[in-house]
Length: 299
Ligand code: C5P
Image (cartoon, rainbow, N blue to C red; front, side, top):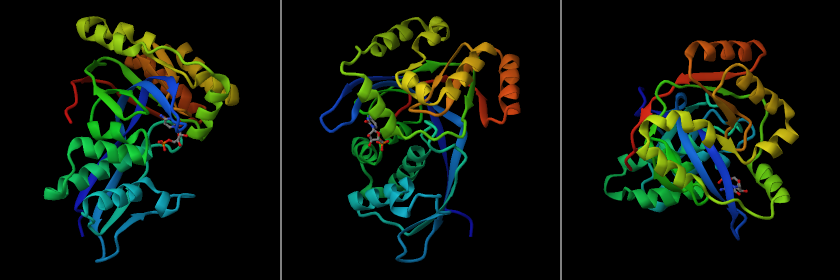
């Protein structure tokens, strides 16, 4: 039987990630610029399931029982919220490295939510309701509902779509076989910080809008990640990768999310190819793609 649909769930990087506050519930307020990585995707093949079977996700992810699988949790949360609960078998092909700061699980969940919402007709949720439901599944899930770059505030769910002109840049993402737990990274940050830093990026992005031609040259200034020093202390090999990418000619490089992926931006394809070749030669998984001009995503 052909699938009902095949969904592509892209990865993301955080071009910038700053932790700007702590909430009473222990979550952290962020100021982050998210970018979809459209060439690095998981796929979800959606098949009609056996009557009454609910949602089955195949294959089972190692160490992740079904009720912890974000795809299943998205189906369960959507069906509870709307009463729309189609029986589905979902074949999930993971290409986005897990525990890598690339948002794979969150993107899988968001792509299923968007598909379910499109099928739900009169039971469909309004964008704001879908956003709230997504945020309960995980702080990164709302971003993937958008389909474009966005500035994220709150715990990641307060999103401002932005226009971002990255045409002419090549993205390289190196994902070493190191899995970093996000709660661990936030706990490390808490242990080191009693005060917070001021928010700068809203101001920065406003200036981007008026100085179109200067966007790219400004990028090195925004590419930074507040997790870096603590993650690099615990995993010095990641700092070595960042330094190597810069030595090989990257304009800028940083950790994505709480790691462990390191991304870099290059201005010249040839230079990026040399860097990718060198990284792969040392056994590291690397994704690379040419970036583009992103218009403002519409909800
Ligand atoms: O929301 P998500 O499940 O992705 O978050 C995993 C963990 O990371 C949370 O339980 C929380 O400890 C931490 N977190 C946080 N502040 C955020 C996002 C996540 O403290 N903005």
